[in-house]
Image (tube, rainbow over all chains, first blue to last red):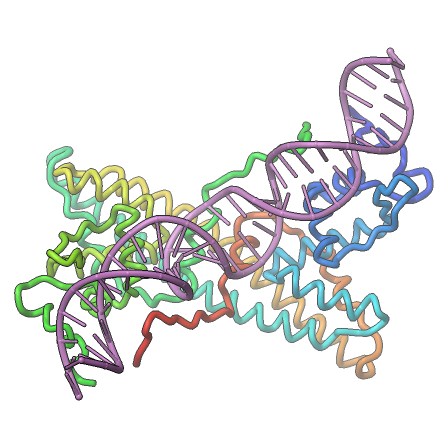
Length: 176
Length: 176
DNA sequence: ATAAAGTCTGGAACCGATTCCAGGGTCAAG
DNA sequence: CTTGACCCTGGAATCGGTTCCAGACTTTAT
């Protein structure tokens, strides 16, 4: 239970990690690592038994990927960047522009989301007043107040209807 | 070009709208209206030719749906609510709780997104400095600074990788 | 009469990161 | 030799709102 990672005994020995080791070390599922590979983000060598073998610095690369994703980059963005990079190039400017674009998106998203929050607050306050001055489980008309909301139809709306309030239950020989 | 809506001549006559009329009146595609029906949100009557016929107040309902969506409600949420409601019930409390939940989500999302924005700003500033003191198209190391970012792995990350910066080109006998 | 526009249906595609699955190897410990 | 823990592959499912499709019918305008 303490030396989870040494279970396979590979990660400290010759400096190479197997997929499970890397998964634990980087906090990502093995499935996800294979997916990153399909996307061209990782290129582990293969051992005789065709097991993937990752160099130690793969952990850094995965962390980089996770951070980039958290900032709004897409896997395809990273694929493009890493391709140039692994070929010896310096995709500095692309990276910078990409980040700048993301910042723009995030800022307008923040704007919209703030509006949504304010609308929701207003709505709740209004509804609570109305509910107070109304006998239980009889009248309503709460929804009608919605029509008054000016929806900018921006990207925020679509975003709200996604994952939120949904927790995944991972399988894959999950433990711990 | 001026009297677009009177093209079918139905919407002012007997007070019922055909799907195209409602689509124009509510700013939603006919496809979407059919989808809402599949989801149980609209129940237009049918004329002899099996065309959908919507009462005038359907426009309000659609507007209500759009506003609710913009606030983060899901179609299934609305389906449940409208079901109770159309049966004569008053789903006030459910609606209120739902909205309260949404507010919570939006607020934590705002929090995360603000962090992301700040990280992006910091990153850009840092990169610009580095790029300035570096000959063009040679060194880089921009991405390395990403590893330093503490990603809370919250819902914000997943949201950023969606629709943003993608515009759809609708068809369906589009005009205007 | 004929063309153009509108409508019908049910099902599939889309977006993107991740997860899940089945069927089959590999390897160490008991 | 068997058990159990890993690993392999490639393809499909997931989430949700919307769009798109094909094939067929109806209405409206020319």
